[in-house]
Image 1 (tube, rainbow, N blue to C red):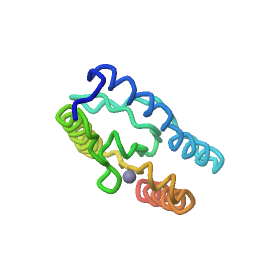
Image 2: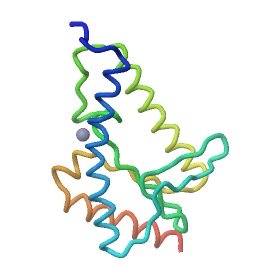
Image 3: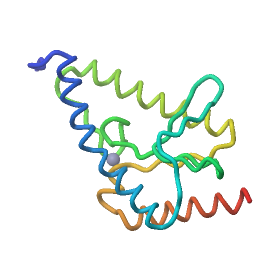
Length: 145
Ligand SMILES: [Zn+2]
């Protein structure tokens, strides 16, 4: 079935959906702040061929945290292909997935630890996910220091 919207308008609609879905990231930030973790947002990491901007960064410990929306990052558990503009979305989500992979690789190459959290684990299992996250951060800090 052809989409009743042009790809541009469709993209606008979907980005609105995206901006609403930034809430999981805020929840993670609030939690970390409350736990007295002092992180940076909008932090730019110069990886040589590219600047990578994680959602949450600990520059001193070189820990980069991404909170990935299940739709936009093509979560293997949740992602469902939209019924219209199949080709457009397939390309877009594939590009996003490839960019994520490249970013991870670049960050690891310059000794950053990468932690990715799926939106669904925050929505479905916040406590457990945060426990896991704290554990990851602390164990990486121990290794570094
Ligand atoms: Zn998911």
